[in-house]
Length: 208
Image 1 (tube, rainbow, N blue to C red):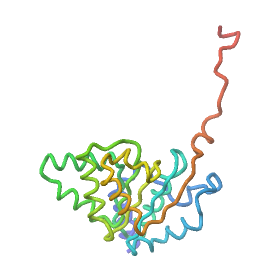
Image 2: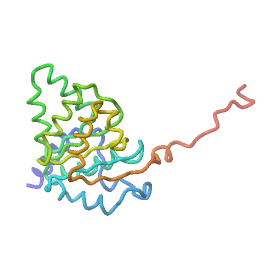
Image 3: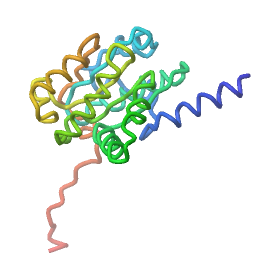
Image 4: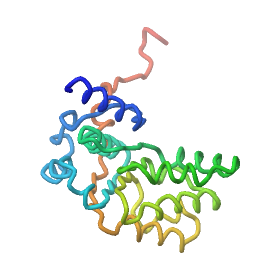
């Protein structure tokens, strides 16, 4: 029974399509004091998914948004939940391709059936009008039915940079923020602070 349970968990982790596997113990809260450790620990228990709530991580690049989203999603897999991880760009591409092949409803249904859908990197690209409407269709389909995690580098007032139609952008924000835990991860990049040591690359007398 233990082996079967382990195989099922591995299958859920594979089906989720995480770009890289991260677990809660991998996140060093001391590196980013903006992240509320107690809140993340509570969310890791998964009760918010049962309540069909969502989580939105807002912060600059390198502040841990994707890692935190992944850790919560991995916890959901370990709890036996169906999870799907995607970037906003990949979601839009999948939907546009499905529409071109007259398979849109099937693909929308696939994203809708996941108990937890993670949409990463909202804010990196502006969606063309048709793609924005398709993404809204997925978000609307899941509204109050199942949970979402969204990571974004943009404050809500700037989401028109992603969803060009202001009314559509407002509708997306309204649906995502309803019953949502909004967690700000700050502006200081952890990756930049912990990058390779900066060396003086100016030419020396020996190399000139």
